[in-house]
Length: 320
Image (cartoon, rainbow, N blue to C red; front, top):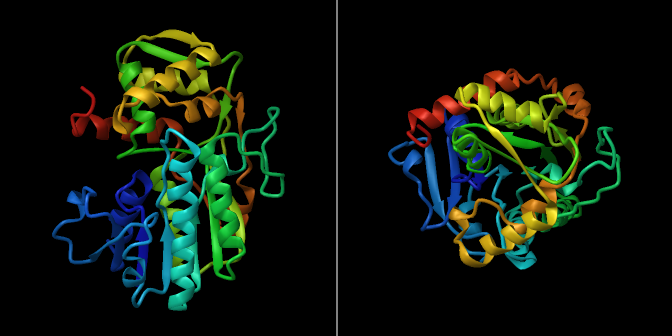
């Protein structure tokens, strides 16, 4: 049996729906989570619990051989909010796995755990980490917990992920759909991207091959994109003209502060921790290790993936 945490999140939801086509899986969710996509599916076993509160984890791990840990907090007001889920929740999971005698874990970390580049030169897994956000710091701490646990692990650091069920890039798509193109900070910015379907297939391949090599892997589609290129492609896919609005970092941080103070999580367009990341000019890494060791070959180009994503949003009437 495979246990998947974070099943109601963006990547987790895509993973569960795909992997359950061929394997029976168990998902660990809160009782308040929306499990609509999973209801009535006999191949999906639902276990209730809470990682950061250390509830229901031992029971959820019964008869489990492999854990895919996707649970994450990406939006928070302060370090503690991120720490409780991303770091402490991971510690609770690892402790329960050890108690159950379960050895194998795939951990979905993040490029943010390593941090941005200082110049237009891709980072490798051997480079020193320099996380700049609370999110990145707490994901790096979670990596360290797993590395020092004695478990057999594969840690993936995907770059910015986009695709169906995503809510972060959706915010930019909605703005571009209204003709607004916001850019935080100065100078051209460069990023890597990965379409969620390609990331999910990599995770499934690792599990199927039982490949737990105690290594960290960056995951991207192998291309370097400028922000301008990405935003223009989204606008073209939407068939919308747009006006670029450059927002100084200090003003963006103030707007993020107001969002953090006055708006609930789901309604925040931006938040301070995210501004720290968006203001950086280089989020680039090299995924050659994944290509070599997993024969990882992304299928989707940015154009194909973004069109499929936007078509899905339109089908769901999320954007019109």
